Length: 161
Image 1 (tube, rainbow, N blue to C red):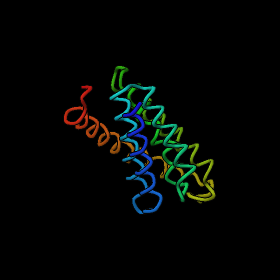
Image 2 (cartoon, rainbow, N blue to C red):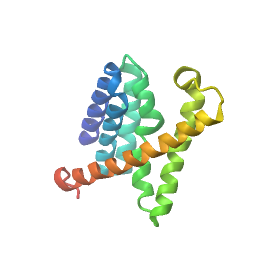
Image 3 (cartoon, rainbow, N blue to C red):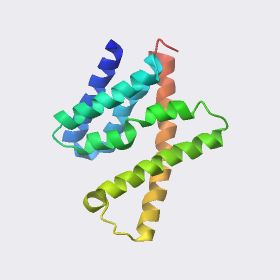
């Protein structure tokens, strides 16, 4: 419980920095998701969900800008939990299909909730195709880097592995 609380505090601090430094919002929210991943590694899925839920709630209650906690709630916070479950499956192609499905469902929810505020693309199919294609490419790079960071954590920092 103590370790999960520490990871929650670190995630909220990362979200706070993202909320007051908007130029680095995506990177800092992605960084906050590393604490959910560390919690999953150290104490299991339930602990990771605890860090996700409490960090999300504290972020929405305490932070001056809601964009960072919303990104955390709608994708980055729960992705480490989903990633750990998906990567237990075989083959690798199925893993990628499920990861991309998770991204695209989240992106669709974000688009429907915030399209008039954030995207303002209208309902033009070419713009949406570019948005989804670009998001999938960036996500593949994110997932690759995230996997490298998790392996670094497991090899150099974690006592659980």
